[in-house]
Length: 260
DNA sequence: GCGACAG
DNA sequence: ATCTTGTCGC
Image (cartoon, rainbow, N blue to C red; front, side, top):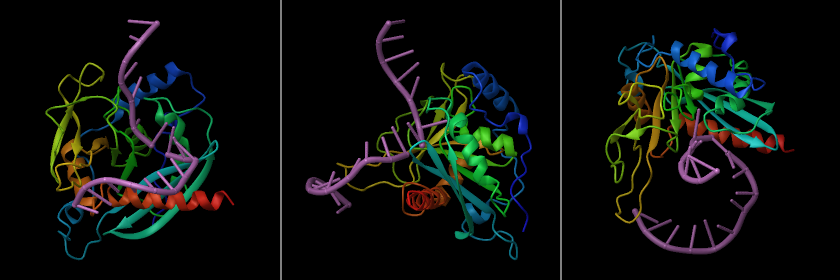
């Protein structure tokens, strides 16, 4: 049982003390180092196919990351699972120094998340973050930023679209369907590049009520299609994938504890 | 100047 | 994100 992921790029840790321009400059640096294609060691088959492709081998460790807030503090929770079974939960409480600014989320919540990462006794094979990855103005959303700093495979799962354009209508998507999100003038990626997918993990049958899709994008070392495949496979009857739901629940639990 | 903008 | 009851529809 190894320890937490190693902080491979301490020089790129998001520092809320930086100026707005320095933050944007660092994000361009993050994007330049990030890998938006499949480049991981673990076998995704146990997750995507729901079974062990290699009998005798352990399924990969998936970490869900989410946060809750209380006053000017962030409660960061990480829940690690293997084959759908929870094997570790950690959380940290960190004081926040800057407000939420669209496009600069990692500088507000990245440090707090890294605080929680340090408490892990396991080394996850994949991280699922609450927020965007490559679907970001400078292709460096929080999932990409943390993924690069730790050099771990990561995926961003957002509940709303920050930027980019759906290749076709995302209205009335059925469960398991997806629509590419392509780069437009607001994104540094080549125009038309697929920077993520609108993913419908769940949908109602009735025509008078519908569920909006999730916006999944590569964080680091995972391509867009695989990221969508993984999120769909990790969802289990709810809109949000299980790793995210568990982290959300644990963050809320920790929050109520912190409140005294 | 106006609009748009993850959590 | 957070503050919050009931309520509409599966």
